[in-house]
Image: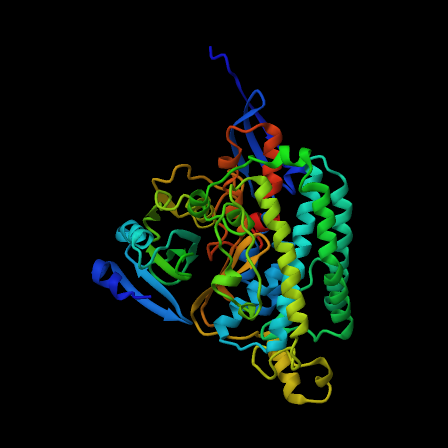
Length: 390
Length: 149
């Protein structure tokens, strides 16, 4: 008989440290993880199947329900893909507002990650700080879109409605103080010896491993890979803004923490530039076949009423072709692959979810580490199971 | 991107090259899939070291009915390339690319789960999103939207 005995235990699917309904089968030798086998699918709702039976604009609310911590980014990735399919030019004002919203969403998502991740590792206070600021962003979203988590605010060709002065005022106030707030988080954690001992050297993933596994976003950047789709293939006017890509060296949990802290600061830079240069003009393309007419025109203009009716009943018909478009979501490369057969519904819609690829690296990062490290690693990956399972 | 190199190297194995909105889609013969993938990954002119995404496709009523789509990405050259291999309904099998891109593991399991396409030499081909006891493959066009129960 072997003097070491391997014990298999269940972590999840209902466990606070798994951030959703993730089940991980852990093979333990004492407290050391021999192997970790993630079991996903508990939140599978068949969103890709539903999408094959919906008109193109009806899919926008479905995308909110993929990565619900970054719904704006999901909206953006989807509408950009459809706009590519239709070859639709978006007004500059709408592109700028989209950038502001996407970066606010990145900050909100990283804040939620920071709070819950620190909480997992026993630091209670960052949660209260992080959620305080996240709430301000949720209020901004609520004011423009009428919803905090599921905005569905973007439309093909622009935005659902133009932003008002309140949006600019609130966002300006938020970014003017947020830099100091990040300093506060850093005071709590960055040089904290307990935090460092729980995160340094834990969950190391080399740059080569990241590439082979298709891992993207802060995880890849934590391993020193300067990969950011906002830089390498800019969309929605990102090429007009100055920002840096924060990088890690070793690829451990601590490096990914530093990368995300750096990204929040860079997002502030981008938002400040976008607010300063915010162009005047329409918030959406006017009179494109993909765009709903303004509601106030429906009672006075028969042409608009007919177009509205057709859009609701039949939707829009793109060319029969296929496109893929990806954006840099808070979690990494978020892409949509759409196959159109020329009808009002997509024939296939595939979501390239960053969490799905990133979670695949879990086993590699956990092997040989302690059970408590597994909790740190799961938290560090920043998974959203709704996006993994779709 | 110069697709001429590919048609010169692989000749008849590349069945179709389409260009739409600057995106290149190559329809390739399933027999040559692994060779083409390895070439695209290792050749400096393509350098597709990352498999962004892999998914199945039900092309009903077209024949062959199914396809597997590979969205490749080269971070160094910042370009994308799409491969498509058609699979016949009678023999729903294709070679696994897990030997080339490790990350294909879960993606191929998902494709098997939702379409029933089997991957030769996959290390652990089983369902991933749906329970093991589930019957049928829900992303097929003949699977009802409401489910079967």
